[in-house]
Length: 97
Image (cartoon, rainbow, N blue to C red; front, side, top):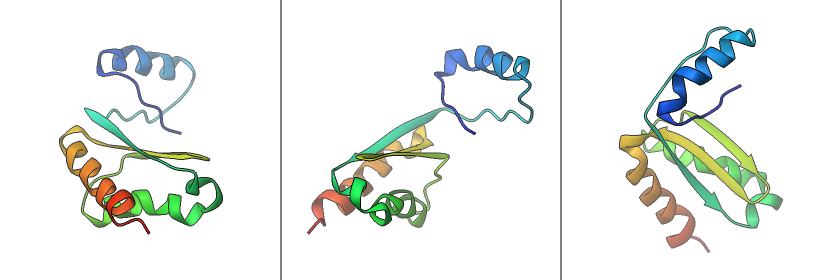
């Protein structure tokens, strides 16, 4: 399982995870979160799967993905965040049928 915390909370989260018996803790960062929101994700899971595929296909690193019925969120390195936003906007807004 993965979780995301603010940078200044990293040490505290690491200690809490270790005290809960979690092993192999990996810390990455800084990260940014980009999300695509739309009703179609709830009824078309293949569309939701496209979100991280689009990012990875452009060579962007997708650290984690979270899906809800109407939203797909991806954690990406902070330096790739603007590119990820532009790319997802292009694919899911500008090119949408």
